[in-house]
Amino acid sequence: MKPIRRTSRGPGAPIRRLLAAIFTVALTFPVAGAAALAGPVPGSDDADFRAARDAWLQDYEAQALPALAQLATDGNDAARLLLGRIDSMPTLQGPYLAHMPATERAALMRAPGGMSGLNWVPLAGDHPVVTAMTALRRPYAAADGGIGAAETLAREGEPLAARTAAMVLAGRGHAGLRHLTPETLESPLVDSEMLFLVWRHADRQARERVAALVAEGHPQRALMGLSTDPERTALWLRESETAAPVAALCAVACPEDNSACLGAAYRAVGGHELLLRIASPSETLISQEEFLASPRGRGSVLRRMMLAHTLRARGEMLARMHERVPCLAAALEDEIERYRRRLPSLDNQP
Image 1 (cartoon, rainbow, N blue to C red):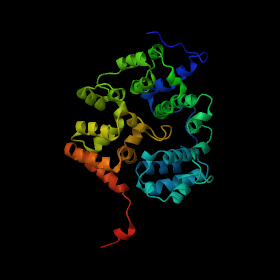
Image 2: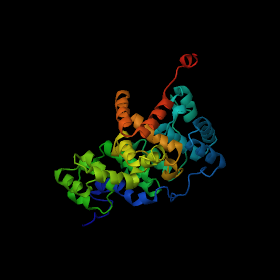
Image 3: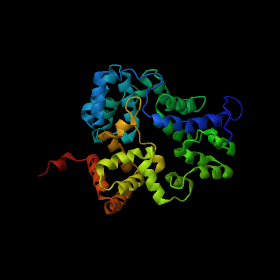
Image 4: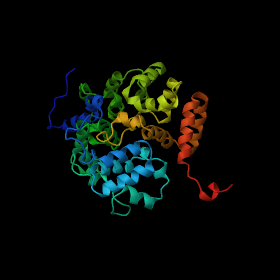
């Protein structure tokens, strides 16, 4: 196949750059968590930051978050980046933070300013990862619509954040996705986990080309209106690095019923697109492997299951899960119970 000619000029430049933002993540994904080219975020080697970071991973929010907040106030850029990411990603927020009144939460998690405080990320210095994450908070303010920021994240050891950025840009209807041609699909850099994004915005001819690139067992076929092979999908869940979030949870929650757990957990998180969004707040600070192996990381998978369903749908999901994978249902119910808000007047009754 003839590769796309790489150039920054000409009428095809916007689509090539967006494809790069979506596709070149595949090149960096095998080295997820690798050191950023620009080096670590300042403050990430500070002993107090490491202690607070580790406490957060162990799900000791009441200890970790105030410590991170004090470090952020004192000027630690790593603490500012971590706090800002936690503040903007609901799956990273445990019960302590979820139950906190809005005014107390703003005082704890945000910098002073505005109506309810300011997110710490834009105040976390000029490290390339911080600059890119700041740019993606307002992609329309960038001349390229945020593509350059996504590319920076992929280059700086943040492939999961880059992948999420590409999905956000696609969801906002970035202009580059409106002009796909069959030729743009000949790039050897295609990220096989995100072909559904290309398919959504392609014309009929290009969609056929995209579909031919997706293996029969890949679950993203459901996002493209295509049939899947259940046995091959089960194999994908067992072997794919992308399925690591549900695999990490099932290894602890259902070690004796792992295969059934993988399928049920995958469905419960809301499918392929939402699975791709379960990630470390910043791999520059916490590798995906370390994050998923931690209580907070596994809790983020359960939290995604909770957020993916309304209260009524959640009950129906749990009923089905109890019949098929009771160990996973028990883990999810325990997590739901942790988030349940209690009334002191009722809790104090004999």
